[in-house]
Length: 512
Image (cartoon, rainbow, N blue to C red):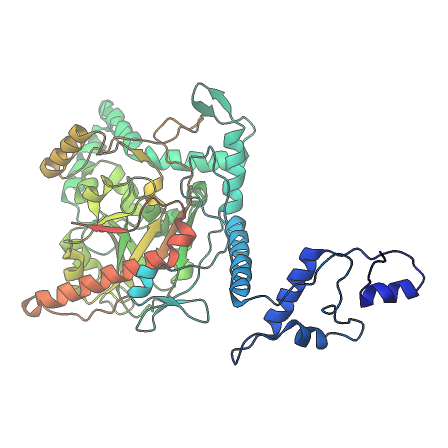
């Protein structure tokens, strides 16, 4: 029985080739689906195959009347098929975008390494709170306030460190650093070691001097000066050393993690500010790098603002160590200190251009520091809001992604007796005893050094505050500013959690 040929088969036969063209049924179906989708409009049903092929170039003839070989031409796709095709293409694009921004972390100690420049995405809970993506790619709330998209630039270096860890020599379950580590990374480790051992080293050196009688004529006046000095609370910042703050040592310190400071909004130098740093973490390495040094470029990002990180007043009673932190610009977190810093000095002599950074969660929040979580002890902490009203300083929320990932800590669920001991020490002595471990100087698994995990410190939108005297301060205004501050932290988390916290175990939680 002779075979029937379609129009294209007859045209090729007449040319003298003598061969049947090879056709792909799947390609034809996809081509027809794409053509119909291209002609589909919102005004009516999709056109038929005849209508579509009729608009094709003149070299193409309709194949609807006669089959090509034993291949039956496809019928026009139904709307359901069109929807399935579109959904499949969208899913494939989504998978490609996800795979382009991820880095394999099979054996890494980096639980929250983030790579790429993927713009922030927003959950339905965020949209319910008034957040959405605008046409320009900015996260906007109901009042039109926006957060720009940010990127984590530490991905390439983190991948290089991961290769070193995977190829490291193992002894049991401990991985040791190879000998061919770059010299720059050894300097980064040295900078972190020097800062981490600063208290122990300086106190030990002080007692060593006390063992030498010849130094007593110097040590006795020094101790009297330490007990009577007001340098940590008078707000004059006389011991602050910009030369020390800009030392290259701190550049190595910041590159160890690595740490980045992200600016999202302008902060005019004509105002004064209270920065709230979250979370506390174990030792607040990110707060030190961002606000006690120029390793991350704070002065360049916020020109005209003199920022002082605040710590417990007891740290200024430690011999020699007090002089070290005073030179780094660190001040006491007492009410007197904050009032003096934000009311003296500055461009106008009344605190303009001054700022302080308070780690609001304090020692209590350090007990909640676990990799992959963000628990903020903030629900009942309103003292910093009252200080903002008392001094007229704007509130600036700061969210440090990765601060809780720098150490592993004993879980309170698995060790409830240790948690009770920690809480008792906190209530009695006002400080904590974190049971933690990190990495070592020459290994990746055992030690008290922080892990090399990215730190992304995001400075949020300033919340305007009008100065109110103590006699006129109302609790309703304090509660309103506190609620707005918490909402702003939630906006920051929703805007950047998919950029800087992809390895998170749960969402942001505000605790009492």
